[in-house]
Image 1 (cartoon, one colour):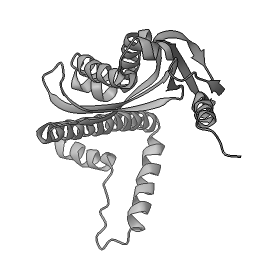
Image 2 (cartoon, helix red, strand yellow):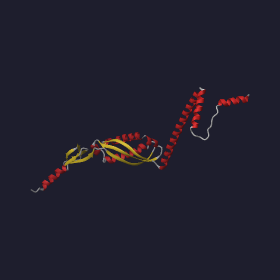
Image 3 (cartoon, one colour):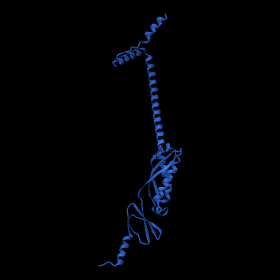
Image 4 (cartoon, helix red, strand yellow):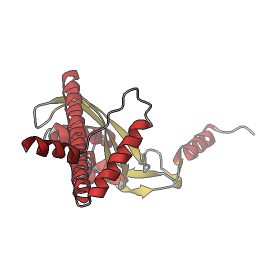
Length: 247
């Protein structure tokens, strides 16, 4: 039995009216141009010519913010890029309140990145990354909330410095390492001097200890297999000759 043109049209209309939304999709329904609700997921019937369905994904979107030329608070020019993680919580707001929520989120992320990083010093930009990320997330999320978008995280990826500034930072880091090394060496000398002073005080209280230390030093010199051995003369023996000379 041949299908009549009318039956073919009916079948085509039925198939075109059936829409299937995945678990992570929602459909913003417009009937005669007016918002009539959000449907999905699952099987959805859209009346052709009467209703329109706009698909919106509710999964987390990873938005790469391109490198931005930024002048920090201490007048240093850098290039900074970032990554913004967000998702659509209210599909109707993402469709009805902004023309293109993806483009709008990208633009507000770029302007906020330039604005916030222009208020911090380079040292803070390099060392206080977590605080800067939190500030960016809070501000971007506040601007995108009317669009039904929730910004969960913002991460500053790379900070590209000019070559001359890289050399300055390298010299600064080297000077800091040298300073720490000198401080550690000085602390070691101070501790060694204190221990030597304590040892001298203890040995000075017992003359026999001086003789034992003298013999121990001779033993250590002998074990070195030196061709020349120096024997220190005790001060008591020298004092005897000095006293005889005075007489």
